[in-house]
Image 1 (cartoon, each protein chain N blue to C red):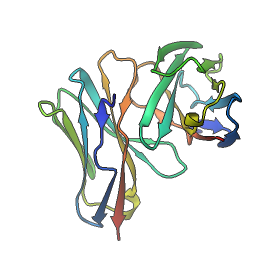
Image 2: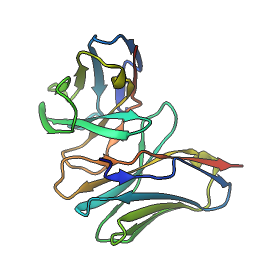
Image 3: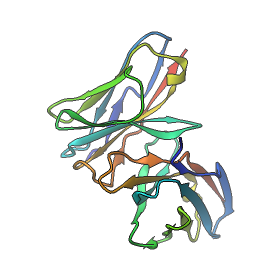
Image 4: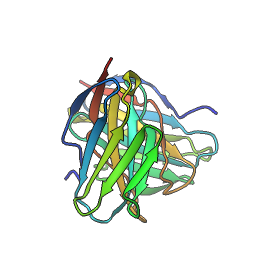
Length: 112
Length: 113
C-alpha cells in the first residue's frame, strides 16, 4: 500500500512561471516531510523539508506547504527555471519511525 | 568531500543468479540505507545499517540481505534473482540514525533477464 502518493506523473511549465508539485499521504502519524530532486543517472538530492508543527517552509525559490487536515503537501517553485527540470519525490516519516516512505515521483519539465 | 559511491553502476544478470551491490558512504557517515526504485512503485525502503547492525527493514523477502563493515561501507545481496528484481538500487548515507537528511548515491541499475 502506497502511503505517500504523487498522482501527477508529469508536469510541464513555462520558464518564469510557478511550478506546483503535489503529494498526498494516508498516515496521520507522519511528522516529517521532505522533497528530493533527481536528475537522470544521479541519485536524489535533498531539496527542502517541513515538520508537522509548521504549515510552510521557504528556501529561496522553493516553498513547501503542509495541510495536515487534508494530508496534503505541495512544493512551489517560483520562478521556474530550465535547470529545475527533474523528477521530484516527496517523502515522509513519523517521529521515531524507522523508515522514509517515498512517493512515485513527478517529472517536471520547464520549457524555455 | 566525496559523495556516496555505488558499484557497479550497471549490471545484467540471469534469473536464478545472485548479485552483490556495493555502497561507500560519505566519510564520517555511519548510517547506510538501501532503496529499490521501480517506475510504478517509486523508492521503496529495503533496510538500514548502522554500526554494522541492521536497524530497520522494509517489506522485502528474505532473498534481499545486506551487511555493513566496520568502515561503514555496505553491501546488499539478492539471491535467486527474479525478473521483478530489475530496478535501480539506491544507497543513501546519513551521519546518524534517524537523521532526516540523507545523501544518495547514483544507484546501480540491475537488469534481470
